[in-house]
Image 1 (cartoon, helix red, strand yellow):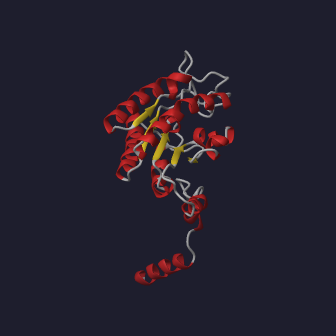
Image 2 (cartoon, helix red, strand yellow):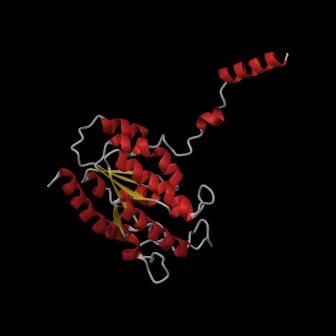
Image 3 (cartoon, one colour):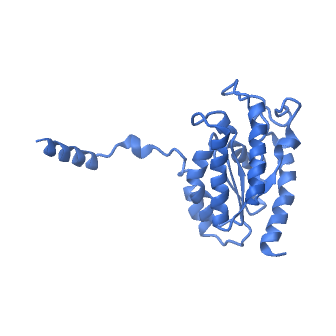
Length: 233
């Protein structure tokens, strides 16, 4: 009788799958699926650059769309994401697009605990995995320092002004060890509290157009040099 009940149970759930489970997409793989399919049908001139990140990266395309539409830059930022989520979608949203370079800007939401508690070492491990995946697929990784934040409006009291500089030092060390390029946004944007001044980020976290202009000024020459080096110029 028990065997019959077990078989009936499996048959029932096979016919009527759990819709809640089906609906779960923790890394948000669905967000860029159609764009990725369309992009694969276009000609790849060997100079693609994917920007992988969270809302800071996603918001970049809204603040200055010309930065992406006027260059072979592909924005794959998703608001609120942490490094384990990015790692899960890294193959789909970066590797499968066959870019020459990937710009990785991640870690602040991990410190904020968006998907649960994360140590600095765990954050670095996830970013290191993305760097190593890039290199294994002939993609030059560019590591970015985490932007300054004195506090998080949605989760105050976590001392990101102390933790972010420590994380950035670890990222700098990883970049050196893995022979990856490193972009130091933090030093160019931080105020005397290790935060973002209001003219660079209204909420202290997400850059204004002026903030993104500083970031563009730092990343552009690095991308230009890296692409020239990859093409053998």
